[in-house]
Length: 204
Image (cartoon, rainbow, N blue to C red):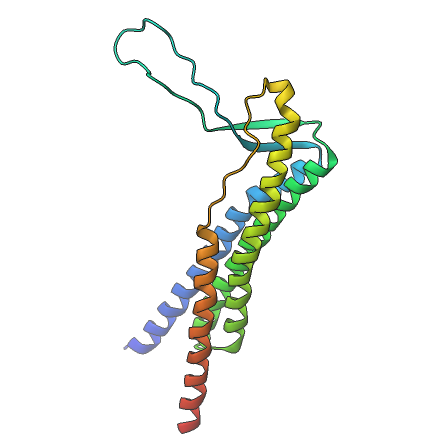
């Protein structure tokens, strides 16, 4: 008869490997747009999203539902001929975004590998979570700040050709900062878990 524990261990290993593969694919998929954007910007072209308050065209006298007021809040554009400093800031923002994603996904993959090796509270995991948390916190700020400054400069440069429709500003989502703080807090939990595991092994 087949040993149920052997089957269970094999299934567990396969499940963890599946999570590792899924994490690698997800990390590549999330980082690829930022990497492509950085390459395109460095090559001279930039596909970016700029803030705008342009009004939505309305047709007067239309039957049925009508628009009382409507404006666009952003516009996705492809720009060429931007200044070198603007392209540098946009490229740095995209690069920091890709690096943040890769570091975070690497920490997740390492966690699953340590689970597979039955060492969930290894010191390497503490370092990985600290790096991932710092990357989300600092990398998120750098990516948003540098990229946002680049978009502001791009809006200023493109406004003369676009009739001044772009708003010189950028939006900032603090969610990544909160996630980074949460991951850093999780590293503290892993630190206590590592100490507890070491103390438990010493009692055996």
